[in-house]
Length: 119
Image (cartoon, rainbow, N blue to C red; front, side, top):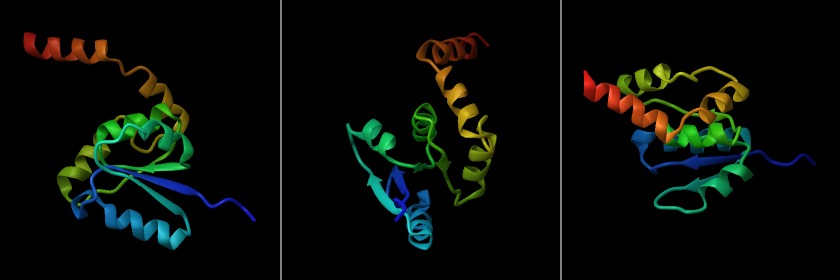
């Protein structure tokens, strides 16, 4: 018998975050759902064990990308939809997402903020 796929829900368990959609999706597909909510120290290990990550947050997506895991997400309102669709990796494959995430560093982020402050 084939191993059941595992989806990791990473984030706040709130209807505004799409938690209920994740539960419905996993139930319909027969996937195992693992929930990582709250202040956790084991998120990297949970991501490694999962087949995919369901998250709506930027950092959750970045963590999944760097672990070469596909990201499942949803948007509940138009603002969230715009946020997701504006993400540079929206609709890309896992390999492209990994390459992008690998280049995201604190130094790069600091440079971006420094340029913003200089404007």
